[in-house]
Length: 108
Image (cartoon, rainbow, N blue to C red):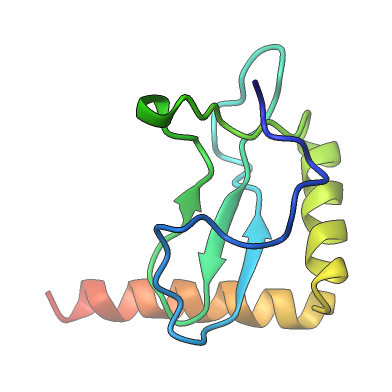
């Protein structure tokens, strides 16, 4: 069974957020499922990368599918807004993740 897009706004238990902000994000470079569309990700403030909400087959959890790119982005924006984030704050959180990724690559 696919994740309902109206589920709670808490991240998966596998995240150690340590008080950091997090947002939903849709990777436009992902290859979407031909019928179900895009799987969203979680981006955590100041943390490199993103976590695809691809489910866990061992626990009978299927990926979250949010439809085509425009619809998936709309859902992400709505969920982020419902969590109290402005578009600017979402951009800042995503930017901090990109910067953290760049910093980790430049030190390795």
